[in-house]
Length: 316
Image (spheres, rainbow, N blue to C red):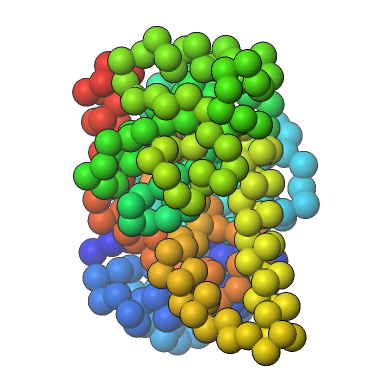
């Protein structure tokens, strides 16, 4: 049985939509048990649960998406995100799925679950395409990044790709051009680091148009750039879907293509557990997709496979 912890309080649409997504997931996957973390002041859990495999976990605190993270966060032990991570760290669940405050999630994951290696900073990784697998890392877990941090993202991204597929990781740094003379001092320093390492395979710089095609399958950048790139891509897609019907163009083919190629949610890699972060603005479909992603990585205990890969390469 795959045990999924769902932090129901983070999404913009509230716990009601998270509960609906949970119902549909449990109905679709007979080997999944959902631990539903919610605040009773915000959501009335049904007196009779629609399924014996949806287990309510009442918490009396939640961290909103607008809150600024400070040291008081670590004392909020009855918040939904804290308790869901704590239960996973005690092996009560196999994966946590949250749609809430990214900064709080990262800080508590480091504090409660722990890092695979000190100073190997955890990063959010997103599958831009599943087959062949292509990833972008980081997506917002870290904003101010030194060269050593970017190098760590490359190691985590490479281990993710090789743990999730049969492909060899081929890493590149996102830059304004592929010429070695271009880029910031941080990018150039990281370029030198990766060039001197035996693993992973490093192919220099990548430009934005290489995110969705080409041989470079791990694109590395800092969290601010990655988050902006991802949301710009999603925004362009939504814009096209809204505009094409005005020109009498059918959007069904595009929608089917994106549905087949896209992945809802991002995985926080570099911690001792499986953790998926969904968009705060996720609707029912997106929430279901993020939970399905969590189930997928839990089936193979992804973090352990990443840990094994990094150990084999002498990183841990």
